[in-house]
Image 1 (tube, helix red, strand yellow):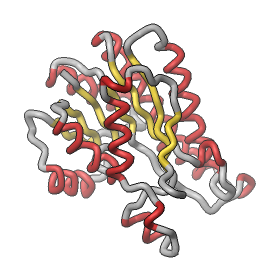
Image 2 (cartoon, rainbow, N blue to C red):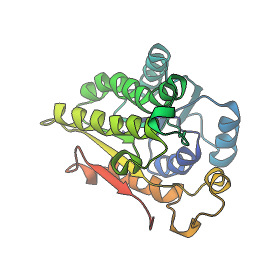
Image 3 (spheres, rainbow, N blue to C red):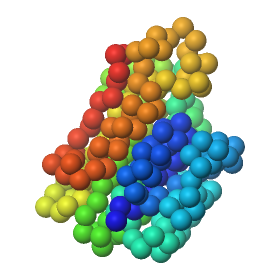
Image 4 (tube, rainbow, N blue to C red):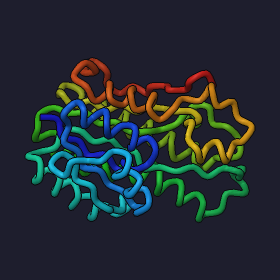
Length: 233
């Protein structure tokens, strides 16, 4: 049985991913922080409580995250996948103009939340004897565009974290890979970038399809990869 926790799973990417995993028969633990996102998730996905445990959980709090994973494992009889979707972007600042608050915010949202999720999941995956770890970095982690140093640094850390875990897991049936979107075509992104070439941007569903594959048995030979999902950008 496939049992996955999706942290930050009520955002745009999570709402695209959850129906795909539900259709595959996954049992899901989905965490969220913003109540309005959870309402949207429930309205769009219509999750069956027998298959999906939805709970407000602060992914920057390792203790709370640990309790959530424990409850998911107890509810569904284990846990063999973690998808760390929590993240956020803040740009408009060169390095010398990046204050401590902005820097810490990007580290908390993108790197610490991923670190805590993966660390909390590993004992369950080892107990299961097989599993998948999927993290979300960004094209910015490798291209390092100007004006968003804190975000670039945090997402580069996600790549390093994922490759480190992948190397630690060599010889097991647990894999760790990261997906690198570029600009994701969402209403919020269009509002922030009104003159962008929307048709070139990957959609949440297109990215979710890649994540779904990485979670599948067919992806067993992929470990430690940073998978670009750039569309035509």
